[in-house]
Image (cartoon, rainbow, N blue to C red; front, top):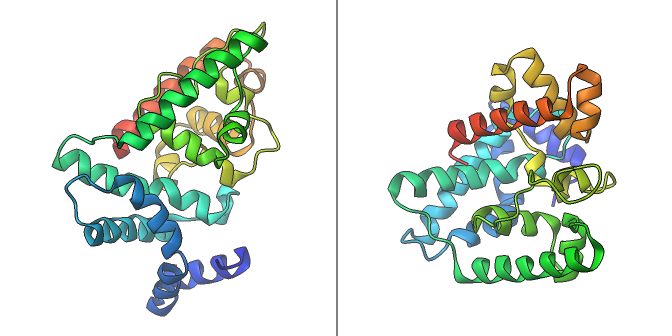
Length: 239
């Protein structure tokens, strides 16, 4: 894979119309694109078509990426690639979840249940990933794609009433949490208040309680506002 510096250089060239830079980016990130489209195989769409859809999403990521997001490009590109495929499958018919993903989700369900019984608290995404020897983003993918019943925004049973996403360790890198990505044009279209909530939560790793203190509102209000923003994003991009 390209270094972060080379990625930025080629992205800037591509955004200026350099087709050679664009081609290099696609070729160098082909493994990333293929790793995502494999989750959508056996759904009645040819592999080459899935790859083309993935490339379309990737090029949208190249076009809209900004260093101001303060995230690695690969992290930004993942939901863009997946979103392009999801929109096609959604418009073309019901998205079926693979048996392996359902099996993984079921195993995670049992693990979470046992963990909570023993520790009186929900495990973090990192702990789940360590248990199953997966990348955190694979855990999140399984939870999302299989409509896993434990939402990242579900309240846990601790004294602080935190959601699971609030309990993800702050040291987690951007590559380990693809849910932290928002598209540039959507952010620009949000109100100043909503924009501040998203930036603090997903780019600055602030908890809802910390955001509430910044905005001088209650944590419940932040939770409600954030949920509305997320629903708006889902409606916009078919997530």
